[in-house]
Length: 208
Ligand code: ADP
Ligand code: MG
Ligand code: MG
Image (cartoon, helix red, strand yellow):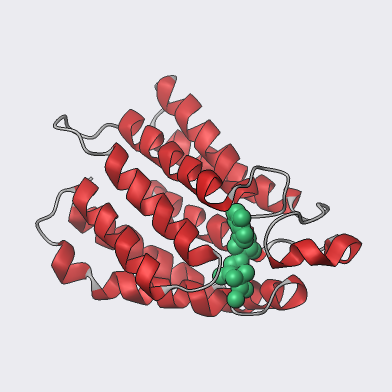
């Protein structure tokens, strides 16, 4: 993975987030404070603005830079969480070896672990982790078993959609929806939705 592919993934993610504006906004309006789409869009624009600065960096340094940029640009609960994800992913990819699919799976998992630590949350709490944790597990498992990239991409899309759907009937115990009790039941979590959208965008590039 080089900075060209990072920039390509970042622009696919940005397009996908913009294409899902209505869904993402509506979900955070129903059981949050309505700003999740704005936060995501701001983060995507900040990363797009970094494209030239990323040129020539290795994947590890580029991801770390993205994380630091997100920390200073996205507000809310999700900003520091996504920042931790990219910084931990960058740290995990600090290797002199050529980056393999196993390295990527391990780095994605390290990013998700960092979100769990930062937000003191687990699966089952109606957050982005209900998408990210099962995706990280499927990714590691399939990479270890030697599946092809298209097979992995297709499986991760399915896992992400199932994870998103799993948030619908959960009570929220983290984030703004935590105060709503039963009222949150029946709604998907906005952060889980944006993670599902981003994972689909990246996997679609692999499948293209
Ligand atoms: P805010 O809630 O501060 O307005 P956003 O709207 O940008 O921030 O992000 C809300 C999303 O962040 C939620 O939908 C949820 O997925 C995620 N989230 C909130 N708190 C946590 C946490 N402690 N751990 C993991 N994810 C969280
Ligand atoms: Mg919000
Ligand atoms: Mg907010």
